[in-house]
View (cartoon, rainbow, N blue to C red):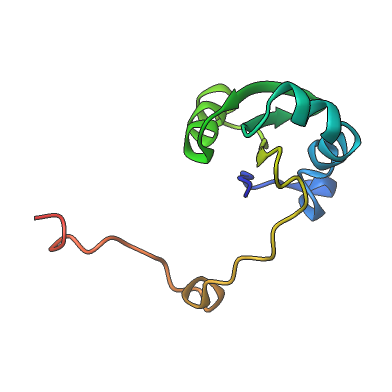
Length: 102
């Protein structure tokens, strides 16, 4: 899985192309160095290795609040299938039900 903030300009087509290419080119070395971890990658550098995806995302949001970054498991370096959420595809926002939190 991955997280990308909104990109603009030429990089908008694939804002994480550089990070994906780095991961693919170094997957064997990274898997040996960080077995079973989720990597926080920006550009061609690993900024952290985490036990959970969410921990990697939290660290990425803290470190790169306005930049794109990739969080990906070294055990699953290939792109996951596209996520299809019909409500989002139709433009409906997902909001929490305030009655549920009570």
